Image 1 (cartoon, rainbow, N blue to C red):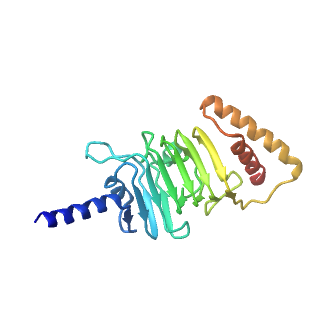
Image 2: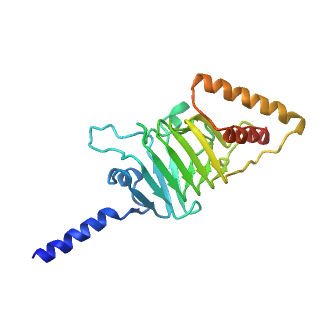
Length: 229
């Protein structure tokens, strides 16, 4: 009997240690609510919707800190960001409260053209081998790292569409990233004006909403501005 109980206990411990594996018919929030701090959730093929709001706390559900979501590839696994309303609420509050989160090998899809998409008041955020599709602007309140990511326009776009806006976030790091644009370049004579305009905007936003941004990120955003003008 003791040997049997030992075997059962060993299997239970192994189950706790193994990453959580999800199927596309499971909801994103249920996978999160059943996870624990520092867990890795393996997402299967398909599309998963990140809820628009965090749990209210009354149901006993909560979002653990420092979760890592791993997909089967950015061409196979999509995490769609669901907002509440227009304006800043087009972003998700699901990781509100400074929750650290990492996404690997997935597509982050912000949907149609809209300003202020992203993640409201999340903690440190890391994106690795991801496709970032849409106009992401809110990147939490911590350090934001993009490793080998590709930034794509939404399916519909106009002359004001951008790949990335550092509206919120403490600091930004881009390593081996690609920014795709679909709009034709304007005359090179206008590019210095665009660069100056972008730098002035960055100074303005840093005074209105103070945050740190690396010179690499600033240069990258300036180059993007020149490309999409």
